[in-house]
Length: 178
Image 1 (cartoon, one colour):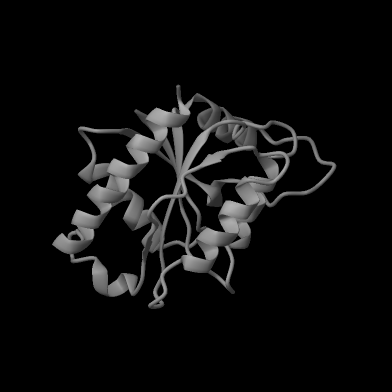
Image 2 (cartoon, rainbow, N blue to C red; image 1 turned 90 degrees about the horizontal axis):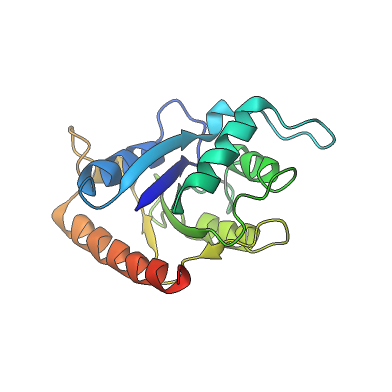
């Protein structure tokens, strides 16, 4: 399965980028994952023609079998850079229409990205998106700096849950892709 994985942070060092890189490495035999960076997109500006970078990003979303978004949580929501990218992707083109989407996230705080993920699910179900968002178990890892070791690996218990989480997503994908 081809996944386009969106790093939902524009930070120079992002634990969500680290998480997606771990997922890419861990599931190398299961998924073909390409990372996309919201930091490479300009801030959304209504009434402006879609920039080439946005059109390219939209094509990657459209060409993927499913989209994986990793979001931190900032002020009980998603970062403005991710929201801006999503606004571009729901204005001129609509590559999320009927696209299976799975959300993960991590944060330096104990609650992980719980509220950010909840908010992101609302955004993706709004008019202009129409994404098929996975609503099974949720992967929202807290205290990110303590989770990753010096090689970017995660603890065995976390990996076990991540395996379960993606097993559930695969079942969801099989169902919505019929």
